[in-house]
Image 1: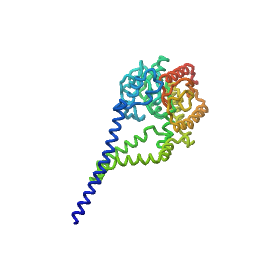
Image 2: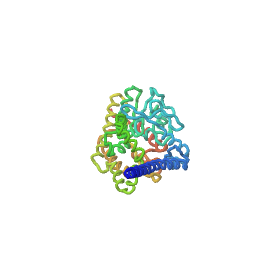
Image 3: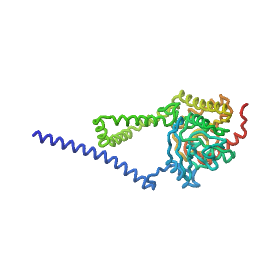
Image 4: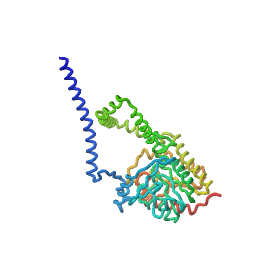
Length: 389
């Protein structure tokens, strides 16, 4: 009698585990099949398609735009001291990156940079997200000025990273005449986030998680056999089920998820943080300017335009209203600080575009026509600029 009861118990336990395992496996399998089917139906299996490639900005050559964004997705970065990351070398039809991680355009100096006169620092707008090598702001500026120009922009760099990159560059003693810091967008986008604050770079959380994961991996190697066994059981029976349960919970509580997202960007609700973000941007520019003066280098800082505060058309874009509130909170403070500082080497380019030309491909990045307009104004302003004695 007792053995029959135990047999029934073990059968039920086995059936339950089999059902749970099958469900966990089925969820993972369905997720994989659906993702592969979507890619196959769109003709892009294994390839990420950036929706910006289909914007009207690229109507003259949509295939080349698609090529560019596919290359962009293939780019890799690596750790670099004091600036956190830099691009690895790459050579494609639309994107070329040299051995030191700089994007290269036609006529740009060799890796030694011994003949370089002008350096551009900033984020991905300077780097040239969305345009070919010869359509970046530094490339157009070189074409207009006939001065050797190097692009030191990098995706997601904030002003502190530009300052550090400038200091790194000075250590190699290049022939440096003029430096342009073209920034503002990334300082607001990243420093207004609740999870990193005003003095971190965009990937602080990612770095922290990577370091923690490395520590956890080390710790896992020291786990007891029991702990390892429980971890394996979680993967086999529960991980995918738990993920779906979380997704379902969020689907039935959209207001809770919306509240979480809204609170991730907080400068519009925190005047103190908005002021701090604006002050830190000016501090980094002023520090860079002082270093440049000590080295006999001319430095210009430019507050870059952003679509939220611009008159140029954006009806072809889907913009994030919450992100726009951050620029509405911070940019006026930056402009007030610039005006109060009375520094002739800080230029406000938020009015560089007119209301008739489509230049934006998202909230800040520009197609080639927009980069050309920025380079033309910068070239004109530099020709007319007389540094204070």
